[in-house]
Structure formats: C-alpha cells, structure tokens
Length: 320
Image (cartoon, rainbow, N blue to C red):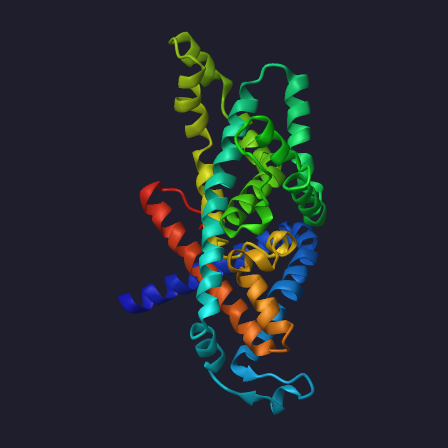
C-alpha cells in the first residue's frame, strides 16, 4: 500500500513539474524566441563542425566521400606524440601562455584599481579611452608597430636604450629567440590591457560606497581600502576570469606568433595552432591537423574542469 502511495505521489510531482515547465515556457516565449537565433548560431558554428573531428580517425582524402574514407583509428595521434617538434611546440605554447596569464591578468587588475583611485573624471576617461583603443587595432598593424619600434635601424627602443647608456650598439630583438616570448607577452598586454580593465572597473563600481566611507571613518588610508575592500569586492570576478584563462591555456591563437616570428626564432615562435597549420593544412595532412586541434580542445576542457574544481574547493568560487 505504501509503495502504491509513493508511486502516485511521484507521478503527481512529475505532472506538476511538467505543468510548471510549460507555464514558464509560455510565459517567457518571447525571450526564448529572441534567444533562438543565437542558439542556431552556436549550433551551426560550434557544434555542427564537430562532425569534422571524424577526419582525425581517417586517412582523409578530399576526393572520397565519407563512406569511402580509410579508417586508421588513433594512428594520427600516435604520429603526433612521436614527433619531437610537437614537444617543442608545446613548450613554446605553455611558456607564452603562462607568461600571458601572469602579466596579462595582473596588469589589468592593477590598472583598474589605479584608475578607480583617480579623482579627476576627465583624466580618468581620457586614460581609459587611450588604453583600450589598441584592442580595436588588428594584429597586422600591431606587429608592424612592434617591428618598427624594435628595429635595429633607428628603432625607438634601441634609441632610448643607447641614450640611457644601457647598450653600446643596437640589438636585433626579433632575431634572438630568448627575447621572443617577452616581446609577445608585452605586445599582448599593451594591446588588451585597457579592454580587460573594463570588466574590473565594472566590478569595482558595484562595491558599496558606504564601505569606503566606514573605512575612512575608521582611519583607513587608500592602500588599506584597496586591500580590504576593493580587492575582496572583485574577488569573484578575478576568480571566474582566471578559471576561463586557464581553460584557454594552450589556445593562444597564432596571429602574433605568425606575424612577429621569422626563421631565426622559429624554435621559440611555433605554437600549436601554427603547428596544425604548417604540418597539417599546408601539407594537405588534413587528418593530422584535425588530430592536433582535437588534442588542443580536449586539453582545454580538462584544464577548465580542473581549475574550476580546485578554485571551488579553495575559494568556494566557480563558474559551474
């Protein structure tokens, strides 16, 4: 009898949930209709292309149909992990990624905190506008500016260093591999610093001004207010963006490395995306290039879930 009663109660709760679902769907039908184009866009450009991952398990030939392709299992991945160049590329990718996270993550936070302390609104707006303008400049233009500034032939950086007496003759920065990672990191920070600062300024704007007023009444100076109010107030934003950055640790693109790199620094400039382009598409090894991209995506997912789990345990903050 109890079992029958429990079964009836479960069915009743299920029916209530279904009714509530449809009521909510009808009530928010316009919101769902507005989101439909974005859902279609995500499906077409993010999920439908995953069908192409099947090429990584084939010896893909463009002239053949899907049913005529030769299936080779994990042979492409075996070739990938047996290639010495792959490990060199991973070293470069991880090195530039870690440097980018450390510098590209800390500088916008510091800049946002400093801008928040500026009392002149005119100067604050001017500084913020100037700082995020490089974000809208393409990497082609940025690479040209960086190349010109680092040129050994009357380049700005060499001229300043020689004027200060730090060097006796110009340095060919883009011809030495041990400078390349630093050049990429500094260029990326300069280009994206102002844009990334906007997020932190928005988070700081959400902190109650009453907390600052109470801190001033208690005698806290600006440094103490930053340390005890501003930084804790934007901690959630910092953690979420850090988790997302870790998830994209090896997906750093290839534009800046491709545009600023050359044969002299090849051992330091190649990253995974460039590796997939040069050893995959350019050599018509489509299956091998797909295998590289699958490795890239799988590692990114693992890093994202790992970072999310660690921060959830340590800081009680997470993105899911």
